[in-house]
Length: 357
Image (cartoon, rainbow, N blue to C red; front, side):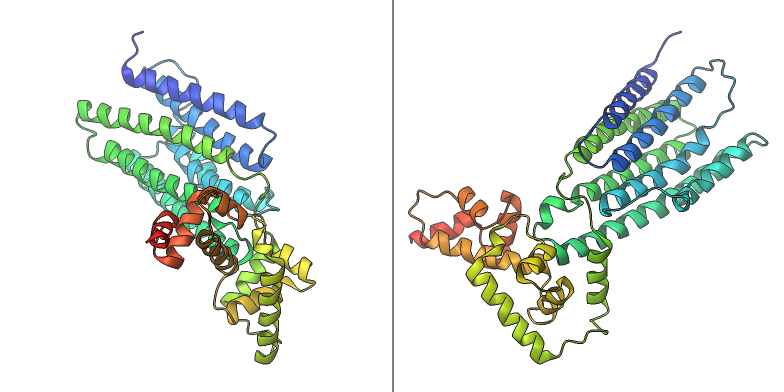
């Protein structure tokens, strides 16, 4: 039996997926459910690739060709994985099992009839596209929640997952071309298929790497966090706060920030602030949204940047920008530079140069 480059790439992807799957299941860091869902995704990919390998080489195999059914699993698994990262109390339930129905139906039908490749391909494409849209919407909703409840948006946002979803779109396009356009050209078909598997090798490595780098201290948003955002979206229609009371509470919050400097805590969230001020987190959220016309993250960062500017002006050149950004409550250089440039129109380095003129 002579293996082609395509076959070698298939086996490499199978090996990589199984190794990463075992690694994820043995990890204690991060969410166990999230790691498990990602491990299942890798297992499905490994089974899919080994099935392709067996049927490409026309090896004897007692199980019917089920390769057309696996495509119905990738979308639901990615969506549920993202959902497990987003919500603190996420648990797998029978309701989640409904996402597997298209796969189960296709799997059952495969034993009784031959499903046309074009029909299964189009069905999988529709299913996968639907879950991609749902995943993008879920991440967008998550970002809205953490902007209104957390002060460290950049370090916990799922921006990396958005990039992977774009990567999946690219891989899907390559797969579609492979299946629909170059099917009659063996050379081009192998070229696209090889490129597809290579892309998956890089995709899987990056996905596992970034998935394990999720901040351990932040386990997702709660039901209460989501309720705050829903209140803001409805413009606090059920609020009992009068404008006079909002003005008074806004002054209280400003006074507390100026005197106690809670923004210096890089892990500050709305619940921490509410506890320290002996206030309701919904009330604080409403005041910040209605009076200051900002979300919680932007409000806190405005104080951080304000102090950073003050420290840069009074800097004796011994204190570095890195020391300043940590001192005022930022925990990453990129988030500090982004917030600083939005506020001043300049990077911290450019701002320092203007002070020297």
